[in-house]
Image: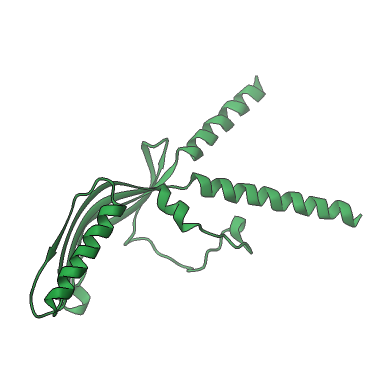
Length: 184
């Protein structure tokens, strides 16, 4: 009976890890390059980072502005002295844009450059975003500026990276045990 209880707990934990996601929620972010240096990004924007377990329950919800990064180096015991290689193509496949509301106003001193940039950015966003709700407005004036308004929710499925981390850790433990047997 005890082993059945342990098995059920481990099964629930495995399902929780498998269905967990990291979500980034950006609310009311406005960037305006025409404003003075300290006011280019609005103060009332919120950027939340949280973990979803079972694709529903939010835990560890943190406001990015209030998070303090003490050490910029990644110093986790599991990752210490490891080269963690990130495959960006796989990471892009695991990114899901749940909601996006993007408004970009773009202007340069050259009207033809403004038109070309607007087309390139619009085409790029059209390829990247599956459910697009964005607007790119060219402003033909004799000055360079950029205005962005963004509200979005982006989720990242990290299951394959957790699996790779655990399997590489187990592989390293297996190699250490094998080396100990050989030395004896």
